Length: 79
Image (cartoon, rainbow, N blue to C red; front, top):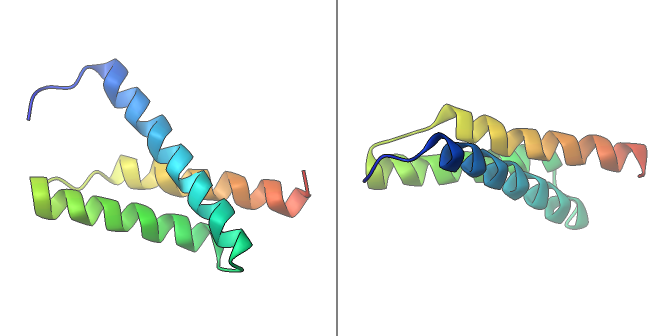
């Protein structure tokens, strides 16, 4: 693995946030818990990264979960 630039690292967090938001939106349509689904997806991805690359990034997990939290509140507000 090569070194990632700070711009790539920042972009990665946006992708995690978007993945969490998308997971929450899909979970909503399936009548599943939104935030828990986002957390589970992020945890699964980081567990895969740990098994594959020996690296579990808590900040990635937080970014994914935050995407789910934002969508959760947007849905509750009926926007």
